[in-house]
Length: 309
Image 1 (tube, helix red, strand yellow):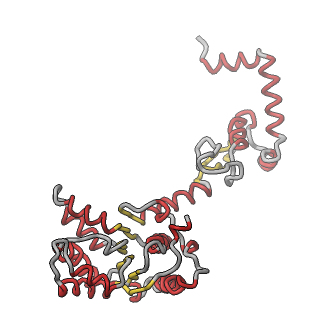
Image 2 (tube, one colour; image 1 turned 180 degrees about the vertical axis):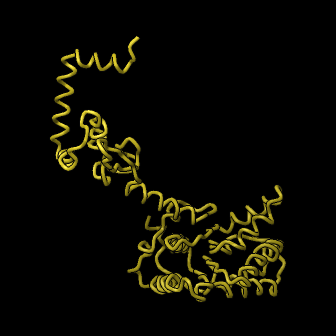
Image 3 (cartoon, rainbow, N blue to C red; image 1 turned 60 degrees about the vertical axis):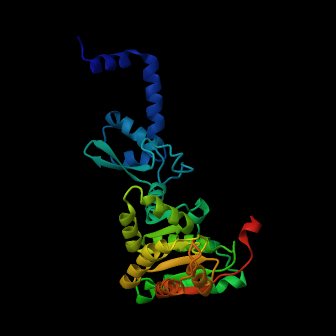
């Protein structure tokens, strides 16, 4: 029995229609504006043996020019662009990551640096450009954010910001924008919606993960507590959880960012009253002093952004 390849070649020689189509495709390929310079530069190429490789190179998108997006990439290996090398009589193709794939991977890498608990998507996509720079009441807060970002790598960056102001002025959006800017500098952060954080800690009592979670929040590079004061907390959570985390970060000079409807003076009054109705001014004052050590109080005002949506 003849080998399959020999039989196929014999069939190709004897099939005139196939030969005509093959020769037509070969002429078109070799006269192509992208392929003809390669052939002219490398006359040593065995064209018949390398037609498939030349055709593959011609039909692939280079530099993302024919691909509207990474998801719609037309190449054999989506997200990879071909390069050719000539070795002797043969051409060899290699594929490298294209521009869009590199950008996608960079974005994914940044997103991994921003961990969050219960944060909406628009907050996780927040940017410095979206901070309403034209609103006079927000300029001071924006300047404080810019100053902090400029201080990265210095002792000034050991202290975050305590952003406070009325409901709906965009305090959480500020935290998201800061987190994404930090990710650009390869600095990880964790954003926590405070009421859900309280519930998360309480639920961890059931699966013995409490110490592990507290240790994580103590040591993350940048911690962000969103809407502190929105929840009614127990004395245990205030002193043993929040106090412990803030104490560690104060001693280790790790920054904390906060957002709140309360000023620090108002938050102290809120924390002094436990969910049982007890008043513990001294213990609340300790928490406030720790907050002052890890952040700078910054007012944030302006129109209610949620009314505009």
